[in-house]
Amino acid sequence: MKYQVQENCLTIFLPHELDHHNAEEIRKESDHLIERNHIRYIIFDFEQTAFCDSSGIGVIMGRYKRIYMLGGEVCAVHTNERMKKMLTMSGVTKIMHIYEEDE
Amino acid sequence: MENTNEMQLIFDSRSSNESFARVTVAAFMTALNPTVEEVSDVKTAVSEAVTNAIIHGYESEVHNIYIRCRTEERTLYVEVEDKGRGIEDVEAAMEPLFTTKPELDRSGMGFSFMEAFMDGLSVVSEPGKGTTVKMKKIVGKGRKLWTAQPL
Image 1 (cartoon, rainbow over the protein chains, first blue to last red):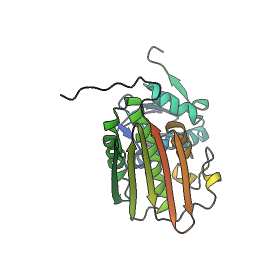
Image 2 (image 1 turned 90 degrees about the horizontal axis):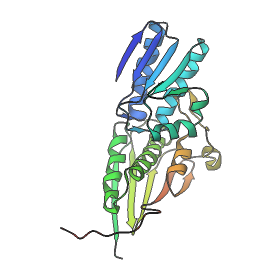
Image 3 (image 1 turned 180 degrees about the vertical axis):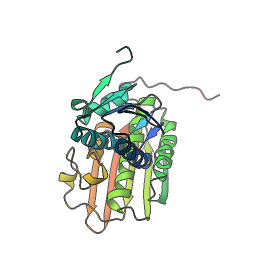
Image 4 (image 1 turned 30 degrees about the horizontal axis):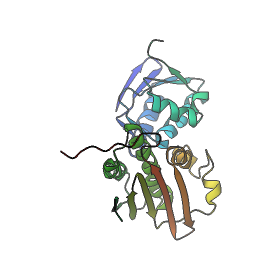
């Protein structure tokens, strides 16, 4: 897992497999970073992610709630077709913008 | 019967075993010659069922999780069983976004994903006794059946 902080924006480079096991880790580490760096924007980068389940969706929803309370926003980049399908099914696309490659 | 195959898996309910469980089931189903998409569907569904057993069934205590797989012609049957606390209202639990543990960032999409990605899902549960999730996946739907000569 890699994180990048630029001013008040946190980019989370999601792992190859985003399941319950490493969702826990992302949850703890990102919440720590959000607090310490006064983060208002989160970018979820799915470039390396080949597998995701509902635990991954839970992490996004949880971070969104936090950031929304602080008046910020979350978005996703490099999502493949399968990831888009899962995000749409769970309704996350209503609260999070997905940026396409050329935007 | 011909063209059937079976396997069973028993493992500890640790979150580190989630990837082991789904990869093992995925490896077992390769004999059916599935597409990448079909393998992903099964991996997601198995991951959801195993995660449920760990978080909700055993509430993070370490006990056994049982997976039974069977293939019959082009169909894969998967059962994931725990002997944990069970579900009081199965119908409510299967509703999208229903979760009893929102504080753990659970999205409540587990059963919805299992339903969406598999071709059949049934849940048998008894409070205090445990839960069994039974799923089925038909491999090669809408694809012409072809057989390769063995090398």
